[in-house]
View 1 (cartoon, helix red, strand yellow):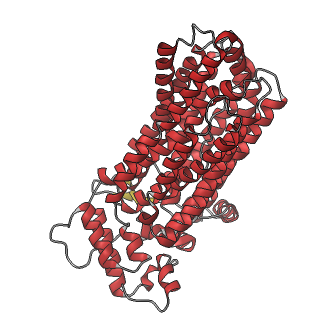
View 2 (cartoon, one colour):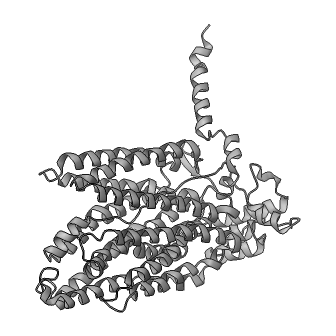
View 3 (cartoon, helix red, strand yellow):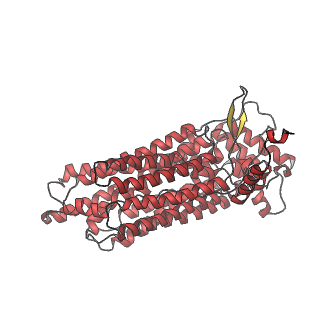
Length: 547
């Protein structure tokens, strides 16, 4: 591509405003050629494997807190009044994620995608080892501070994975396979949740068979208290330490990935490297001419992401079944319930989205899914109030599973995909990091709200209030997605005369809000309100032709 007057202008050339025709002819030809070579290909196993392996690792490490917190509570703070330790652990993990998303999102735009792709896994590996060795044993009283520190560092690595995996997958994908590639990468999140529960279940069953926890009446009979605490202290270390294994495998894959062609072309201004790296991943196109046609444009701007927070469990139930009764099978039952109501439903929702990724309009479906989730949350909250501790109580399980299914079939997956599509190349990682960090800030707020409700109310049906509050917040998300997001697809007519969805290219979407408006999209609540009034006041075709 042709040189620009100064480094700043060259760095910002990935955002061309609403008129990409301002590009010099040679630059436009390079851009079209790169898009042509990318779009000759479909779903790519190599790119998906590199991104998905790291995302699976980070999901496992993030949600493993749910698995190990019961064991840690038994060993280090068995008092019934000790509620705040779990809050601190989850709070600093999420805070680290916010920092990682913002910091690595910016650095990936400034230094390049693959230069940082792997550093976040090093952080995860080091912090995993740090968490697993946070104390010298079950009687080490300095445990909590060191554990929280390493979880904070791990959170930074986990947060960094969000913008990097999403944007690298997006920029390496062909236009038609982009939605499927990104959504199948994100599906590793619920799979990581399920894997953490399965590993915890396997370790617990293994330790029960080898150490006889039930026979020692742990938590009930103080005769074997030291033996019980020592055994349980090993359980959570094995579960956490296991997270380093997939991270080591994932980091090896990343040595075989090159910087995305779009970044090399539009930000670094190196078309030769961009085309060469693309051909090293996909192979050279057969008999490609010098310049290639590219579709017309459309585009725009911003989104917010609402990532799920680690799910809390009742400390009252924990104390009663785990400490007072010494019922070790409570943990087994907890793992099975989590797998059935959360993990399997979430995996099913993500899998359904992968199947229908190119058949549903993403912006519209995000708005609909927010609206449906709001209704489901309200219904679930009302069911909690109505059938708690009655024969109809299993209905709550069904509705919770439906919430998790719909969450991953819609909003959770889409708020990962859309920020990786709609921003210019030179700001894409930064904007995705801001979007993901906004979601994690929402998780922190939700964490504090849940803690406050559980601390202030003793009623068994207080979980219903939590669902009702969540329903109101989700409804707000429906308004913002309806008013402020662009369409990343457009309706066209195929050769058979059928109306089909066509994916817009990243270059089109990067042209911004003004370009979207030029092509007929209505952005912001104010403009949509004016558009609605204009439509209502304008005469219909039949009225216009009446004498």
